[in-house]
Length: 89
Image (cartoon, rainbow, N blue to C red; front, side, top):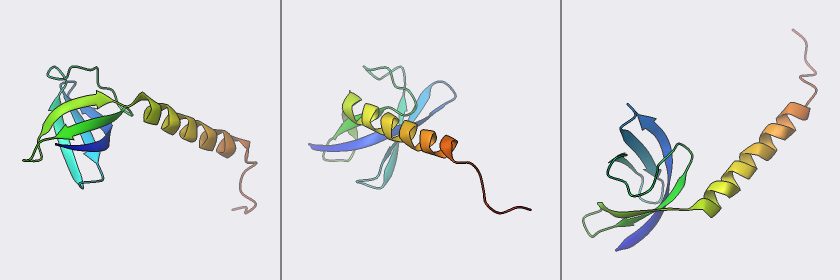
């Protein structure tokens, strides 16, 4: 069994979660009802893949999620502090 990290990219039609895993360059589509954890956009998860590359188990990775949310928040704060472009149209 292989463990990989992925992010819930989007929720489609309120029934499917699209999870992107860069390590294996693959996109997984999971029914939200099937999941044992509540999936939401921006949630980092650890996927346990079986030998066929299919998802056997999904675990939330709250540490990675919080770290990425802080990173985005810091970037947004810096962007808001900028005074604007020095070039005029």
